[in-house]
Image 1: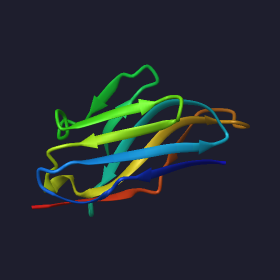
Image 2 (image 1 turned 180 degrees about the vertical axis):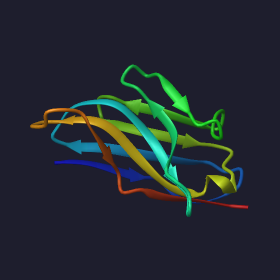
Image 3 (image 1 turned 30 degrees about the vertical axis):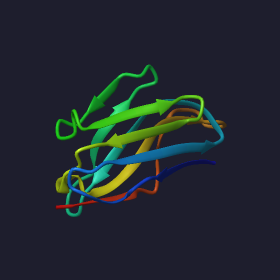
Length: 121
């Protein structure tokens, strides 16, 4: 069984910083892309940042130059450093991995349970 567990969410004032972490564990054979998504109340889930197996990154326009995604292949972890936070960054943040579990036949999307980020003005 595979699990993605996030940590690091919380309440911060506008202009502050938070660091989210996500660890994938269980019967993992291989991980391709990993990323962070977020969902604000009444809105659809959106991609915040992604990182490929080769280290190529992509970001939503709204977070470019403020957020940085990084990955530790050996530990199967992905992190999101969020700086200069704005009230509009308030959302539940979800970790995602394109992952091949042992015993599976293909790569599948796995999701964490989500962590709340609240930015006060």
